[in-house]
Length: 350
Length: 282
Image 1 (spheres, rainbow over the protein chains, first blue to last red):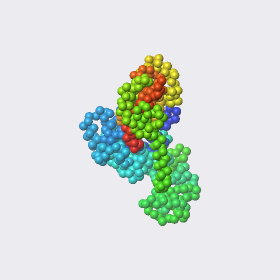
Image 2: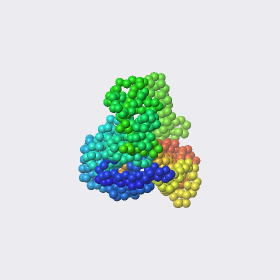
Image 3: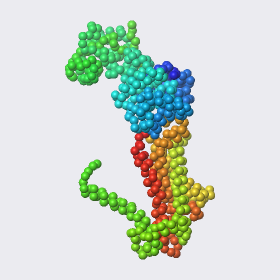
Image 4: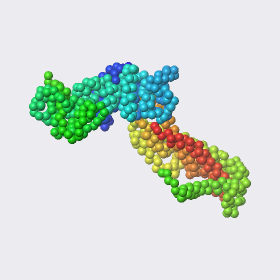
């Protein structure tokens, strides 16, 4: 149990390329924090710096208020779950679970008790004497988590642990990780590029982009009040539509600029666009339907409005046909406003 | 490709049988020759069926050697060869696995240079550098010793290179997981890398054992004391005799005996080879 504090953390590679640009982050005790961002944004590097697998070239990282910049990974009291599991192939599952404890000279009876407990929790007791190669992907993932669990560390670090699993298993394991984390209340940092995984798992979410933090907050905060264009486009599926303010008719423009002064980009969530009985101040867009993607409970309708491509999420199957013209309505109170030059959200003027 | 064409079957079998004959016939002839008396060969006709002198011939070479050509008893030479081959296997594998570990897993100054220097020695086998090597060994007083027989052959890059290539295929995450699990460099090497290299070590052992066993030129140079003769050079000594015909039956007995240990090693290690092929997943 511990907090993790990052103060002005930087990472510069020997070649001179800075990949983490002075980053501050306080992770609360028992929190499940998810780092999310596109590949190459530095999220894995940051996690590996917390783990001690990458050196810190600037700033301080403290785990449980103890600065750990120069501390070996083994002495940081953290456990890590790797993307490709990184199980020791020549050891049995039991051997894999025990290895970290043995290296710390843990007494035999404690090792046995912890292994039994972790195996019970993860339902891998029947496989304890098998080799990793005799297990399926999901089972290996459980063993990898078990290896972290038995150590009873101050913090868990997850590096895209589910990306090698198929979609169905990923959903199951996601729930399991969350349940486990809730039960153990161990501070956890979880890296993923999958925004769905990030949203569902996180207590708090950190969106990263090219070595910087774009926004930190609960998943709902980030979804409802994205601070930047990047966050707005990254969180939510299908992604937010962006329309330049200048594309609207002038009367709409002037009424919108009253809502947010200085904004020149309007963001619209696909699920807030409707096609039926709007109230009077809704903005009407005459669109051409290009493509319909039925997804079961809803349909993603790809439409073209003037030169602009938009995605509309409709409940059920609205019975449009591709190529037809259809009016859609935007609710002005559900719009997001941004300043294109700075990429920042413009707060409502009121 | 599953095809069922009878004439193709016949053809493939013919080719295979031919191949077996080419390899096996000389061995068979050597064995047959070693069971005959000394006079049979002088007529110029090679017998094809075993003769009655099997035990007699083998007994003689094993315990007495061939006094006329100054060859010591074969038992002694077999022991020397075995010892030499084993020292080469153990020495080469232990040195090269450690150096490969250093080159792959540690960042030290001139690391790449070190690797290339090791790599370049691949171009310089013992035969190429034989004169300077002999000079060095002689100056160090290692002539007529097991050290002189083996050390120059131990220093070579092939095994280092092979282990390096293998270590590069081991995922980095394993090393990182071990670091998080509290395993230092030596523990990681002992607990993880060494067990993973088991099949590689087995394969290399076979190759290196045979490499050590068939050494001819080097032992010929550094040993003048019959106590240190090895079997392969011994055969040559038996075949060249002054003022009389070589005793081919005894030479062939020595040849057959010299073949047995490598064959035995290959057969014994074959299980590990196959296991290594099955256990490819890391």
